[in-house]
Length: 307
Image (cartoon, rainbow, N blue to C red; front, side, top):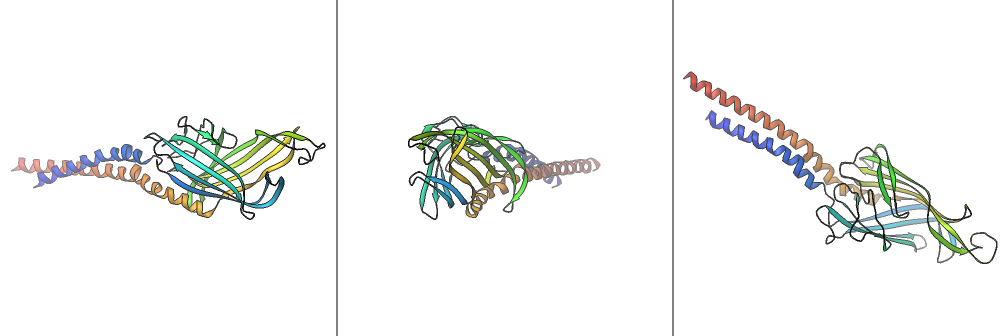
């Protein structure tokens, strides 16, 4: 009976020792992939925003503005390594029920690292644009270091720096900040009078854009928990800003933040268990069972020798 128990202990220990790396390197990695059928809605809210209404040809100040973003996964265009997501954003003056602007974006990114992949008709506003760096999210197991993050408005990749660890809405997060200094994103031709310039004709100026973007990232999943964007766009003529096109800070509302937390919760719980807690427990248990079984076998052998 002792011999049977010893063999069972050793067999169980070997199974646990084999299970530990399987969980750590196969099961965990299979879970660390962005979903193909992803679907998400987010709302950025801004108070005391200034913007130029192209339809009414006037500057609107002190506005309450919201940006509504929908992201949907294109399952047919995605595969095991790369996921393709489509994003549509439209910006609205809430009090005046007035649509300010809209943006469409399509991009493929690596399902694990979140970095852009040049494929799948990547575009911004139906114009082909190669999108590099982090696209929609950060990597699983985000590190405490600087990354590169693609910005849709400037259609370019810029550094985003690690600013430290924080607790945001009850979640332990890494804070990242991206600062984009004034860059030219296009040109605007407007009446000279609107630009407070002499003459009756039209004047063409440079449309300049600047931004400070802050992300609060849940590091296990790489999911953004919070987002704040302080942005400014204006028309510059002869190195002087003549008209503000948009100025304000937009922040994810509480409902969006809660939705992001719920999206990250399963990974926050399951991944540490599968990557660390359970494999270590299996290793410890495996060693204990193997040693225990070995001792039982030795004891059984000694009894048989003594008899």
